[in-house]
Image 1 (cartoon, rainbow, N blue to C red):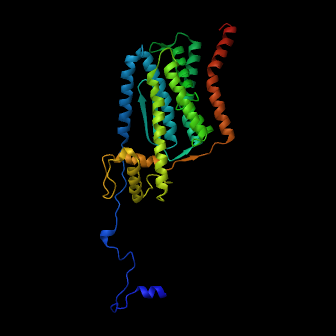
Image 2: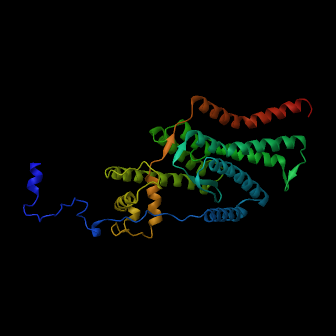
Image 3: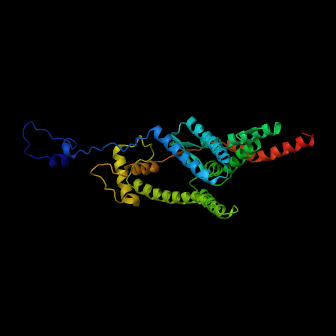
Length: 346
């Protein structure tokens, strides 16, 4: 109490009161942070981009594939494959879903979710190739019962082989194919050095296959390793940003919706100061959105922690291995089935 008494003036007017620190701050000194940036993305815009990418895929494919019937067959196989991923992600309540086609290479489903479950991831990844393989097997049995059956001028045997082969290729343990993602997500620790070595080996394999794996180089396939390398550089920059943000005592263990506006503008300043892509953006204050605000918001999204729930038991992992091996054994079973029938004169 002695120190407090000495800090007060001796000549206070009668009836006056001492204001606390908060009451002494003028309204001009109170910082009002604008709301964090929100992207106005409508579902119609996402699907419009999906249809545009599909149109580009078909137009370019028309000039590459020897037959438009084969092009439509491969497109149908890819579409059914991606719809399997799409409906599985929709069932597990992923946001901002869309299907996008990459000319000459295939397609992918985009979506976002903060808490990622191993079990959900495994189901989503297998929901693409397994139904396609099952459809291929069904067409094979229809073909065996009646070899003259055809659809749009394509024999059921051609349709069967296309469904089985394309989906089996996607199950190969090479990142970023479904099989590679399954191996990385379920059986490897994505943050470990083992996982990083696996990704490097996948990059090397894809480069080798694009240049020497077929009768002539398939340069379009080099897009996959290029994207993977660029992503690795991007992840390295994000790690550096994370360390800077941790020094600012900002809680990043939350969703973007729960991120306070004040924290958004603090993180924004760190991104501007540390990320070369935003060196021309003015830091705040003043608290104003920039032309690159959407990209800044995407970077903030990437920095917020995502949770991988380790919810797959040993029995669950064994079941996935059985499904995986069974898919690759499907052609062998069909060959064995055909051999048995031929022995009995069918």
